[in-house]
Length: 83
Image (tube, rainbow, N blue to C red; front, top):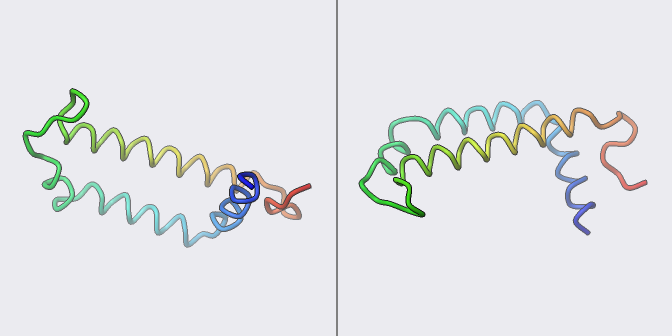
């Protein structure tokens, strides 16, 4: 079941519009309103909330880029379908 969900996700990530949407979301995530929300003197897991927000956003963006690259590497005929 997990392989089927991953293949469907990869099939949908192959769209150019998804690249643009995730780029815009990344830009929005690094702008004033969201940065200001997490720039407080709060600590989670021994780290300030601001740094945790930046590190989590960085890790999530790397995972999204990995999924995009994985979708691009699929052969044209396969498109993520089970063999």
